[in-house]
Amino acid sequence: MTTTATATTTTTDIPRSRIDWTQPVLWLFALVLAGLILLPMSWLAIYAVTDKARHPTLQNFVTLFTDPDFLDPLLTTAIIAVSSAVICCVVAAPISWLVSRTDMPARQTVRALVTASFVTPPFLGAVAWELLAAPNSGLLNQLYRYATGAESDSYLFNIYTLPGIIFVISSYTFPFVFVLVANALDTMPGELEDASAILGAKAWTTARRVTIPLALPALVAGSLIAFLQAMTLFGSPAILALPAGFHTMTTKIWSLFQYPPKYELAAAAAVPLLVLTMLLLQAQKFVLGRRGYSVVGGKYGTPRRVEMGGWRWAAFAFCMLVLMAPVFLPYFALLNAAVSPNATTLATPWTMTLHNIVFVFTELSSTALVLKNTVILGIATATVGTIMALVIAYVTTRKAIVGWRALGFLATAPVAVPGIVLGVGLFLSYTRGPVVLFGTLWILLLAFLTINLPSAYQQLQAAFATIHPELEDASRILGATRLQSLVRITAPLLRTGVIATWCFIFIGVMRELSAAIVLFTSQTKVLSVLIYDLNESGDLAAISVLGIAMLVITFAVVLAVNRIPMFGGARQGAGVVTG
Image 1 (cartoon, rainbow, N blue to C red):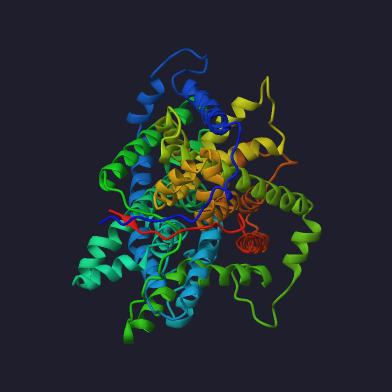
Image 2 (cartoon, one colour):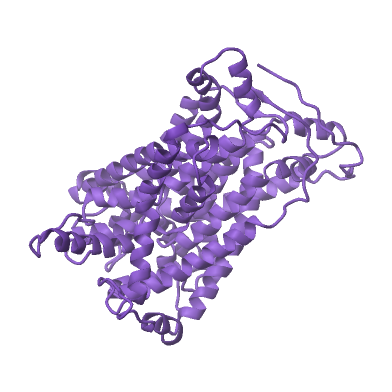
């Protein structure tokens, strides 16, 4: 079914440009992206196929695929990534539908709480679940022993296990899937489902033929991001797996940086992750096929809410039960530890203290500098990264320049390289001439930008797929260049996606630990590194205070950004979908 659309843009809305700067600007962004990715990746490639004397060799890969010390972490990583991706889709997809398409009560509250679980760094969540579910000292296990009279060495939960790690990682990864699917459902024209119902289709037929195909790109993109996030995550495995006595690939690679360092093996270990990412991207294209589902225009009817009747409150209870894992219980544990004399003891009105807060903000000398560095890097990375992702997604979706496929690969490839390995590549790249950035915030900006670009690119590429190019074609017929069409027509239609991408990147910077732990100095330390340092020393109370401060900063910035009007509003026509 194809329906045409009319645009209300006139020749006075788009100024004609004597010089078309589109191609130079697009090529400039392409060159910046190539340099950003290829320089550290080239150093990793060199180290992967050389020995310590820089002689060519394949022995690194032989060791990688024959030594059980590497095969076991590789298998463990695969189990964690697959399990987390499946759990994220199973949990996030129904919650997205309940929030976007039903009359479930408190839908906006549920959406806000899912956002809260997203902004919580996984390593901070791992610390919180240490406080809750450590076999001996966990608050839940203490409650279990108190309620049942069980022996002092018995426990109900043990977070230091493979299922425990999968549980924690899934709890802080499923928001990636939720945001993508919920945005797709929110922007889906309601007229399509109404038309299907008018033509006699039942609810399931409409869902199968209309709703699911339109949401499928977002679901597949979300599952891919969830898989890769789980596969390349360092903080949670470092906090939970190492005490349990086993490694994932990221913690194993991190161990290779300890004295004596083995950079060659660390670089070689990143190659299978990169190959796996390429295979997953091809699988994504195969699943989606050649069909296109896109929206023409920016104004359409609001989808009709599905009336759930007596199931409304059951659905709400289900959402609250799911959110116990990433939000309610961990936040309670952190707040309790922040005001308790002992982090693993339940605080009471008679034992509560402000000593931990006073210590962090007055006696811990690095707190002020760390907070300043973190906010500066978060805002700068989110702004630059959103602009880059917007342009690169436009180039690859609209095939605007030669080599757009290569740009798409470059924009996605860094997600397969663990942040700690990328950090080493950047360290090797920028500790020697002609450009020396080590010891400055610039090298951390490059690291955070490279790490978060794939998620931003996937988000905006999925958003571009919902905007039909006929709108841009109409703008160009009226005299606009490609660049003007992007700025004046497409970007305003992508307002929600652009804001979501900015928030994605900012939160990603707050969550990032693995690259920062390689690249920081005493003057460029960020909040995640300070928290990890305190975890090494076992100061869980100070971690809780800093973690709460991190969450407050993140929420404040995200709320402020969402209140900023963008582009002054777009003049839009009516539109529908082509299928």
